[in-house]
Image (cartoon, helix red, strand yellow):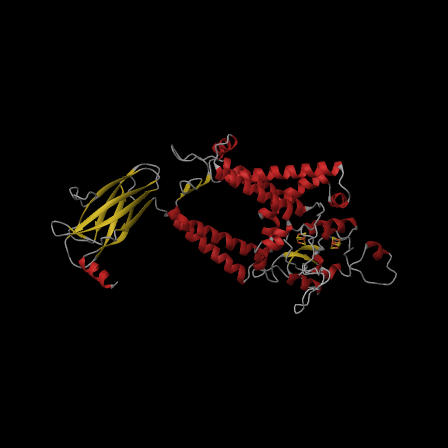
Length: 497
Ligand code: SF4
Ligand code: SF4
């Protein structure tokens, strides 16, 4: 790899005692040159879309009724809810998040196997914010050559104020980014007010600082090093690529032998040159500082800016564009032999990803459309396992939790099925013994109730169901429970399960 040392050390020998043996190459600052073209325009459009979406979304409002948050997308940590327009997710709905993550991962696998690292090159937050920071840098300090000259020469007032201005704007963008992130977790208008009036709380100020600092450092300073050294994605994306994936490729069969235009025009030796005029445009445009002509490389994020750079060079010298293009290795190898192959978008791996995505989408749609607004959880007393009451029958105690996910107060009827001659009570005196208990639960709340179940002594344990019905909506649910008798207690004492 490119970053292994200038001097390859012998693993069996100690570093030289005198002088310093450098094991790793110093990091070389990359000064990407501005390019224009179709890819650059597409990247700007995606940048505006992504950043616009990120900054504006917390301000979208959604009426959910009185007492409910009116932010369209809100991950409410304090009340443990996730609001997404009309949908409201509780902690019990965590499997929807799991489904979404699986879907996102499969989508990424599919896109990568079809078009290489387009996610990295176009929509990854690291790429988008780095692009924005580079735009600011370019506007203030100039393009590649000017910036290189500034950095190589002594500090002047002109350079100093430009650098101060650049970092100030970077910090402002980073702060805006960090602040916007907080708004996904707290009501946007009120947190902005609380933030600027000093009432927001330490966590809010702390996280805003953390996200501001990480944006500033990652997009302003670390840049391509995040993609090359920190991000795990490039390491395993190669498993999704094959020779039929569309990636940014240099068409060496057409470009080689490369040579400067002057050398090509003054060619007196009869050398056979290709279309590459060795202008270096693709290298200077590259935000990771690599040469695409060297073939597929790990630092290549598939941003396609080298395509624009090369197309510009080709147009200038009146040669066909597309010397660097999105193409498959298979097609390139065939074209080199004069054969034109069609693109193979549907191949086993893409079909498998598509099928898995279809299954995940179907399961999620069915699960969402049958999503319950009622939930019943039961915790049985363990000490004691049962109590024999005055009339000789057996009593078990349970803590019942009823979740009312509707926005209206409701009474829930709690009943039992599968246990003969049983009754329930909520008081230790058992005066309120009933077959059905009526449990009131407020809107969007979880009600906790202590319920005592009494049944004749049958010795053994009995399986039964708690049944729960929302009297407003008629929605029902059941919970499979066990009524423990004296035999269960004896088995427990003897260690029998
Ligand atoms: S080689 Fe081309 S596609 Fe790859 S990162 Fe550099 S400019 Fe982007
Ligand atoms: S931009 Fe095109 S012509 Fe210039 S060096 Fe790169 S591949 Fe060759």
